[in-house]
Length: 288
Image (cartoon, rainbow, N blue to C red; front, side, top):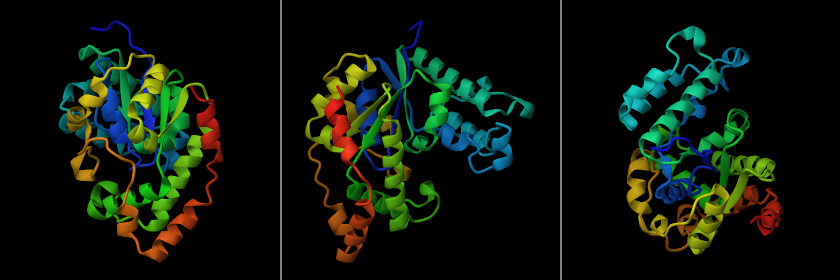
């Protein structure tokens, strides 16, 4: 087993940007351990509970979520013993340290050298994650906005319950992509952050993976492109439509044209066009 772990990796991006695909590819590497979306910060940070947030307490949603996740999603109920037992210790920083310790333990048990966490909505908690894990490597995945909106709209209408119980409106789908792009723009200049385009992964996966492996500090292996579908089976969440079901083939999506009529497409494009993406090409040109 590994005596010392390398800094962990986080994958961020707007939901439906291909984060499950990228996670599956990277998690196929023999040095990387990864798990289904933990949603730890999403459920743990009391963002919408002002009194608890004021005192640095966890959200009331976290304990039930941890119980369900470790017992039923990844079948490791013994990991719950590492979290604080009494309410007086319900501080988010203590729970975060316990969470990190648990992922470290699971990684060591697998004989891996680092762990990878992928929960798209953790992008909204990036500042806190960096505060607690300043050494972590952050991968931002960016996908064409119209394709993301089409995918979000479709999946939330097909599987509403895992997505908050409501079918997302066009405005919400647009807003989530815009918000994700802006958060990425604010952080991507930092040396421990890297930007990846979904379309680049699809059209030239090996070249993009070589860059990512260099960024992470691991050697590229062809198995990442050969066996990722098998890896995705233990990471995907079928009930939420988060699956990887086919080979990497192309980046052209017909969903946008099929789902929306002409006026809806014009509305979406107008909403997305307000975002300045000039920094993306500038940054990609400088990034090695």
